[in-house]
Image (cartoon, rainbow, N blue to C red; front, side, top):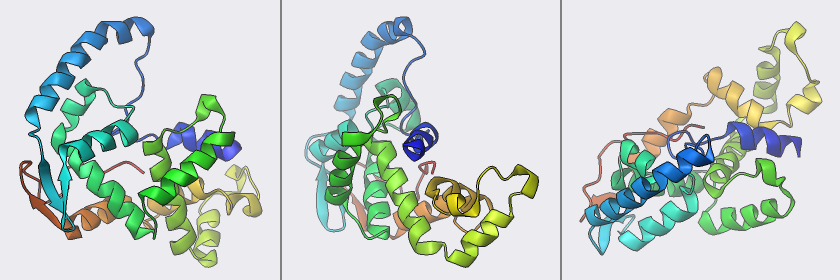
Length: 218
């Protein structure tokens, strides 16, 4: 449970899930504005195939379903600032590419999320978008950090600041990922940009960017 609390609090997708409003009054004030922006966003996206991804057409319905399922914490106002339809499309591609990179897929991660939801503390429960990033980062740690690398990461922490034993440290995948990124053993931003560039994307109704505009914070 401690890990769930840590990951739930820290692995917020700042670019895609920007959190709830600070108070109910603000939420009520913004509700009508957000509804207007939803209508405007829908008008920007034509019906039918938006782009082709790995030989398969991705439709407006596919992107809307992705948005509702994996970008549920993002309001229309926030989404507009991030890039609107293009951001949703890039996030769709990245989600699939990251899961494929660690040998998984959407069906598998959703089954894992359902199991996680059964025991997760509601106060710290991750939404599906957050869970995907936690799932991917854990897999990367498992597959790419050898025991020697984990030991070296532990040694980067000054002895006087070590608050956990090595045995506890090596089981904390979230902390391992963050330290590995800090020390340059893992480069999440480069990984996402490379995966996006290599993905088979062809513009249709929606003009897709050739290079990734915004990475998902990991």
